[in-house]
Amino acid sequence: MKLFMVQVPTSHLGAKEKVFPLGLSRLSSLVPQEIEKRVLDMNICPDPWADLKKGLESFGPDVVALSFRNLDPLAGHQASYLSSLKTAAMMVRALLPGARILAGGPAFSLFSSRLMEEVPEIDIGLLGEGELVFPRLIGPGLDAEKIPGILWRHKNQIISNPPGPKISMDKLPEMDVKAFCPNDYAKANSYVAAMGIEGKRGCDLFCGYCLYPFLGGACMRLKSPALIVDEMEQLSKAFGIRLFHFTDSVVNRPAHHFEQLCRELVRRKLDITWTGFFREDSLTGQNLSLAMEAGLAAIYFSGDALTQHGLRLLNKQMTCENILKASRLTAEHKILTMCHFLVNLPGEDENTVQKASEMLDQLLCIHGPAGSLGAVIFNHVRLYPGTPLTQRLIRSGDLDPGTDLLYPVYHNPERFNHVLHEFEARCHSAGVFSRLGLSPGSNDSVMKRTTK
Image (cartoon, rainbow, N blue to C red; front, side):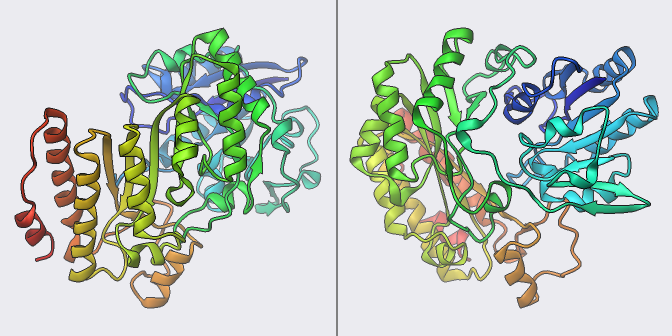
């Protein structure tokens, strides 16, 4: 048996920043020795489609596993990566009519049934985590009916098997760093961490627009801090990796696990730094100081709303004061801070936009003197099937229930669709002035334009 594992393109081609294929590398380490294996990450290829064609023709695999990580680039871009999955599957079928084609990955899981219909070349789809079932999909004998968590074809029908148990985080397979060399990614990046580290999977917060609980489970499964740091230490010693990014939905929850992780990093005295997404209401001066001692290089916040209206709408379960308090802490500690917010949310009016504008000014005033604000990233909310926010818009008549959400759909009514650009311009000016030690002056004129 021959297996070809392929990460299909899910980034803007030509982008300098590369991301190590963490999930596919773990699956690669599970492939038995009797199966001949090759891998290809099309995201790091100068000419990815020519390289895929060459690999298929020269290797002639019996099984091709296509990993589909991102459905679209978010950040308001009206672009879809669906064509990457379609084209890859079509090329496999055209060149190797008898090959078994598997598909999986986070993007595939979000629309698994729909993608099985949309891409008829796919024989088997893997829904969610693959570590417990992947070895059963690549051998010469395949009894699809008995494998949990997959979709497969039978007599022109798509059969969806019930999900099976989720893997214990302490039993995650190692990354296959021989097949996927970390240096191919770390050396390409200028400042963004190329190497992801998993401290946990799942999320119990149920934000109104988010699918993390669907992808990873509705409770947090924690990995032992010692095992997390073992992985970081091994990658540092073997490949000189100095910057990591935690892929956890929230790195500082639960607090006891986060603090144990930081203490383990401090104890090891490793020459490494790391980043991750933090929850504002779980941040304290004590655990922030501990994190910085443990190598925290930059902190990412995803408050997602600048008003109490938005926080309630998105079920963030925190307040504007939590966001301001966290910003004061990071400014006091002079730690580089990135903030993410969604604007033009459902139900916005002149009053909420004005409050958002005032909240933004407070954040800029907090970080300006410290020069600690790396960026404020604004987006419109991406709508996915089944989320509470999407269902609310359908019930209110603001979203046609027949809208195809496979392709990028953002909530961005025309009345306030300029707000994102107004806020971005203000943050740009504030960032330049902060870096150069200048006083930004008044934003009254900007605020008037924003709410007109």
